[in-house]
Length: 298
Image (cartoon, rainbow, N blue to C red; front, side, top):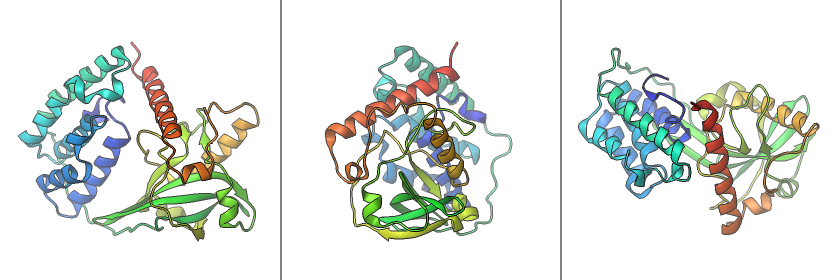
């Protein structure tokens, strides 16, 4: 992973920032302009849980492009303060590993990268769906599952959709009302594609979706401004593996029960129940820490 070091540094937030950093850099923006845009977009000073992840992602982007500035380096150095590590505070041993990895990252990026990235020609890929679209995605010939598009974002020359998947399986057609009666699909640990665990929500770039976008079609739409938070952060998904993930989970459920703490219906998802939301966020934090421990065991 280069300057990232161990997986204890590289998570969904840093991955998001790095992906966007490359797009903006290739579009012609300077690293300073990109940093200023990210400060405005992510507001790290107001986000104690993700402060260090945001600045780590920005610093990594600048380092990769051969233009790490002193302002960003100082912000990353500040991130070693425990007040910016609230996500790790419950596990002191993991917290110290986190701070150690961050300190090593700081040392690493102060040595200029031997071969800085060169700008690449951009192919424009705008988001395929609108916020509120309900879509069907084919996983077998004449077998589909329903999903809800919660966000559309176009920045620079690339777009992305945030999509929440349901357990609503259908053959030829389905109504919006039937989708609303289903549940949010949950993915358990296991299988060849074990890169995600939790209530199935992910960010998909239009670039990633382009190859297999014909598998999806619009069913209908809903008007919704807010949704239930399913976890701490939203992971980056691989559209090309969605079918496999569904098959793996369905196969797993035929042999064992899911470890999900609570069933979340689509109706729940369309409401902001604070008690349920906090329960899901705490569960997400728990499995996040569990996933890191085996990678960083001594």
